[in-house]
Image (tube, rainbow, N blue to C red; front, side, top):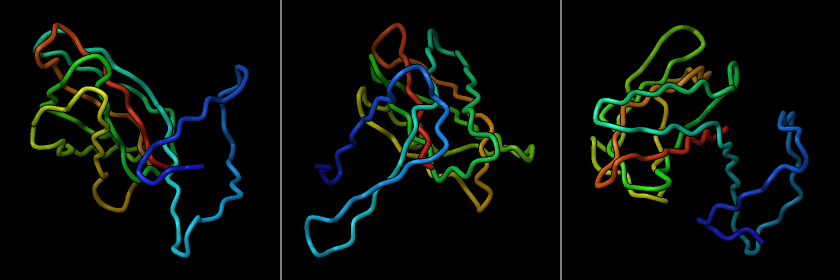
Length: 142
């Protein structure tokens, strides 16, 4: 049973992690339509100090990405810069809650601008809020 508004994590069996497709056989529990969003954990970055900048290559080159989400794991975080780089060479600064604090264990979704969605990498400038370091998980909605 998938509950509305609650993510369900599925661990892939074995060591193979290259996924070519997913097939669902689902039905809504009421008469309304239902929607399932698929997200992939595409990386995690650890930040120590005020000016730490990390970049992750999301491994989705050539794939359509609707949005990304960030989730601080072990502390609150403040990110002053998030830049998406696309496989056509263009890059775009993303607005991440206007620089407000990202709460530990809470997903913060960021929609990608425009119509071009083939994401190559994400660069983050973040720091821990009230701690010495923070690790941030990065998710992509496909």
